[in-house]
Amino acid sequence: MYSERFTRRSFLQTVSATSVLAGRFQSSKPPNIVMVVVDDLGTGDAGCYGNPVIKTPGLDLLAEHGTRFTHAFCTTASCSASRSVILTGLYNHASGQYGHMHDFHHFKTFDHVQSLPVFLRHAGYRTVRTGKYHVAPPSVYAFEDEVVLPGASPLERAEACASVFTRNDSRPFFLYFCTNEPHRPFVRNGSDPVSPDDVLVPDYLPDLPETRAELARYYMSVQRADRGLLRLIELLQQSGVWDQTIMIFLSDNGIAFPGAKTTLYEPGMRLPCVIRRPDVAPGVCDAMITWADLTPTLLDLAGAGPELPPVHGRSFKEIMTQSPSAGWDEVFASHTFHEVTMYYPMRVVRGRRYKLIWNIAHELPYPFATDLHASETWQSTLANGLSHYGKRRVHDYLHRPEFELYDLESDPHEVRNLAGSLGAQAVLEEYQARIRTHQQRTGDPWILKWDYE
Image (cartoon, one colour):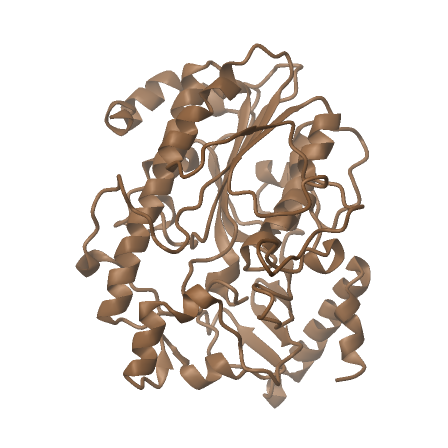
């Protein structure tokens, strides 16, 4: 098997330490770009992010030879909406991709929006996508080519992409490689088995037998996704383009459990992100970045012209070579829908210490994605009449106040809301003003909700 022969030793023999140091990439040709987006992976759910149980040799290798971000965030914890941010650099309230595009949900990006693959193609790139697409319309997110492989595993999909790296074409390539894993249902064929007794139950989930069983299946689905990543790295090596290729790995949103995905609590929006650049030494970056920053960063790295498209994010190209990451200490999030039946607009500002969530439709009970409500973990919580779901009260999860203000230093689990505390009123007002300023800057229609309702 490839996972047995492509060991850490063989990788280091092929990729010498100097190949990842600054100055190695000297080609006048723009770099190739491979972006790997997995579906519903939490930030602590990989070896390089501190999980000793999940076997993720692919991501661990990428992190060893790349930059591992510790404060990377999606701007909305929903699949279609988040992927549109990744590919446009725009918040959903401006792009129109408010939620899911498929079936009766039918959300679509505005026709005038310009996307990363279109800009890269105009810059001379060969653009190819494979796997989960989940954005619309195709005219906005237009790729030159597609590797079609319905029902393929990540490993099979990676194998099918070998020709992308070896094709006789003078242009650099941009490969957008997306897996369905580890989305529910947790497909785990071909993965090493994981025992429910061995999983690490995070604090935002209840430690129930049902939770452990679901987490074990999730771990195996993560491992299945990682097999594709590891094989992509090997194929890039074999084809001789590794030293000319930037590789990005990220997740669209948090793990598919209530308390994470669809929420803008930390488990829903703080995510893994690893970027390997041939011209940057390996390391760890604590800059606070969001998925809105990806499009401007990649266009900057591609040398796609002095003028970037009108986006809400900014390039973090230079910050990857600097420490500390001054000026990257605040992020914003904007969520409106997941499924069309799940209207619950939230706007968030998160700094190093404080985080404010504005629940614009706070009078409504918090809505559930169909698969999350059906999860064994949530159903067991209800069936057993539990008062708490992890560290949060069930009532507080379902019924939220207009403002949630958390001190993440003293309350990393976001369970002590300071919005009503007299001692926190100055912070509350400051962060409310920050949200409103961000809404003005990004053309958020929901800004009018400050004045009525």
